[in-house]
Length: 221
Ligand code: SAH
Image (cartoon, rainbow, N blue to C red; front, side, top):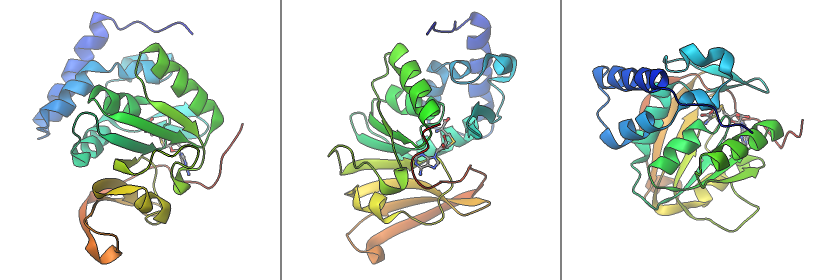
């Protein structure tokens, strides 16, 4: 794979995107810095190069889309990450959100169910020397291949029909999960696991979003 080039023009467009996020009231400087550092155009088809720094979703193949930068900013902010935390991401997709988590110093484990996306994201993240552990599998069941649970943080980047019990089980006590819940539209939830039963979970709500759906099983083609 030849690594794409990050030109001054791309850097300039990226700075403008960060300024727009600030202007819209986003104040998490650590997240803004990570967004400024990661070349989003590497993660989408070069046909969309000029628009890569607009607040838009783009097709990434397999009927899937890269999330809007503003959504990535919001979900990352809600995670309240500290460096070296163990983070599980469900829905690697292009790998862009994964890269942002890596830049924030997290130890990232990410699961994708579509094999072509899994392979492409893993190759690109390797090229960028971002050390996420990528897995092909069904994220509804969490990470079953290797025994890395429990996680400090879990981030779901597809719309889940309900809170997957396996993911709650793999979240540390005191840990945070950010997950969009709903079928056609989703409500963004932040769940803090303050105890082992559901009655102990603190659930906060952060508005409506449109994600691609969380689907069953592993898709090999
Ligand atoms: N974070 C990604 C968002 C991609 S869209 C990015 O920044 O590009 C959501 C992704 O979730 C899609 O790639 C889709 O294939 C994946 N997905 C859907 N259901 C899944 C499941 N059960 N397990 C793992 N990945 C899933």
